[in-house]
Image (cartoon, rainbow, N blue to C red; front, side):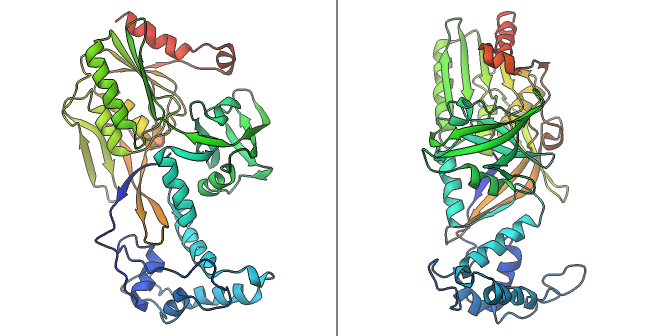
Length: 423
């Protein structure tokens, strides 16, 4: 799951119908200008000229001073030549839709950056994305990412159909319903894996630990994600399990912190295993419940400019011995929290090396309901470790093997209890 921030476009969006402005919109996806002109109705006859077409047709060539590529002009005539050719010569001419062509070209523009986390989403995809953040959607309940250009399971969500079917972090998804995933981006994969409640998706996965490829059938369901669970155990250890950093996480965490203050436990286990990430601000707020002052995470841009996100000065949990559990499914915001507590020497990190997803995406919504996620920066821990390149290495590495799972034992959790009881 991408670590991202929502960006308010309200002041930058202008509905100006001019050919030159629209050319910039087409070529930049409104990255810097934030401009958008709405398209036509989805049911429009493909043979009728769209508003987009009538506006853009007048654009001609781009100004050399505005946009250059190897010091050559970009001539939009090639774009329109292809547009016309597809509409006139495609075998299923009646199936060619202006909006599909237009949105498809924007998706292709984002994909040309060769970054699996920079994605343009049409209104339908954008709605599904926002539903996932709100904690409710239909599918199998599994986060995926790219590792070595292979579609890989980051984490099945707790109690999800994916977890019940036996999908595990690190599983490589080789095919979806028999369709190979090679050259399939994350956006395409998620659309194919998600689906209506009660339908079945068949995943062909390769599991390195078992050195085997097998098919797993998963029945999709309504997925509701309560992002955090907490409890005071009988042994006076307070457990906080965070499944993702969603819209409800901070409120639930504040409730947990309040209960910790009342119970005054002997220690805290913060379980971030198989947590694919989420909101940046939430991760900073949570880390600040241990870190009183100093840097939580650093943000570095392509220009070399670095911003620092500092602790909010709460530190209500600083006095409690803490163990953080991580694994290969801990990514993004999870890695920020684990890395910050490790660097400030406020927690012992136990488990397996994290996923290594340390880039941030800015989310921008457009008036028609479409949106774009853009990778804008990478994250470093307070000591300067690149999360994206290295991940977080635990202080004590403990494997959680398939046979442990099948036997119902959890050596990582047992190690956390051992550390706190010997503290």
